[in-house]
Length: 293
Ligand SMILES: Nc1ncnc2c1ncn2[C@@H]1O[C@H](COP(=O)(O)OP(=O)(O)OP(=O)(O)O)[C@@H](O)[C@H]1O
Ligand SMILES: [Mg+2]
Image 1 (cartoon, helix red, strand yellow):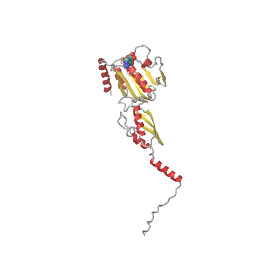
Image 2: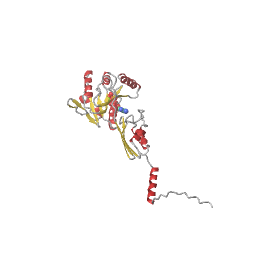
Image 3: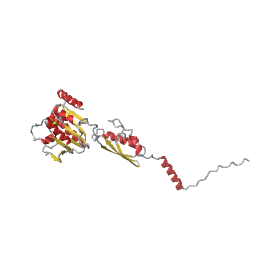
Image 4: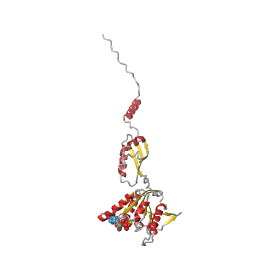
């Protein structure tokens, strides 16, 4: 007779039905475990999203700020270089997509705003205008091509996009900004020796037209005009502005040239109509900006 094989002895662990259920739950939780979203994880994902214009990632450009993570909910500021960026929604979408792809993230709130950068290194010999980050000069080769219309529209559009904007109408030959912005009867005001700009459509406005009698011809000569313009730039309470748009007199004569030379211009818009003769003049105006920096 063969001896009976000893039966394997299995340890008997007693557990109640409740304990078994709890154990199964913890296993289930472990299987479905979602990694926690973190600020670092979000930043690391966004360091692969590029600014389409600057060709660098949004994190190293300091365009991602105030990231907060609460559970799976992420919120952050996307700070653009101008509120008028045509790629705002494209960038907002790219950020949302990248953040939602981070494990553990279930929702994202991207607040798009802007922090306008001041033009770098105002050119030598040109005094920056206090509080003004960027000066945009609007010029033309010829008169009557739509310079003032463009100046007013650019200013109003930047203002509507959320920028702080001023417009300086320096066209002594035909200051038309007061008409375009409905300020024809504005009385120029001052405070402590400073000029106070007018306001229209949320933008600050100063026109050489505020100093002239309606319909009177301009008899100012060079030096007096330069002095007036200098006062318009430096003796006016512009406050903090992202952009100051200047409607220059037309052409490339003494007056517009001197104005451009004394102003720390960040960018220029040269307006023209499509005729050949107008285009010859506009090329001269473009060269004027190239020559004076
Ligand atoms: N894009 C456009 N298409 C058609 N007409 C326009 C356009 N822009 C402006 N105009 C019209 O052309 C005329 C001249 O425009 P505007 O006064 O803006 O030009 P300007 O270059 O500032 O002239 P000036 O040299 O007299 O200052 C105006 O009657 C304006 O309404
Ligand atoms: Mg004009």
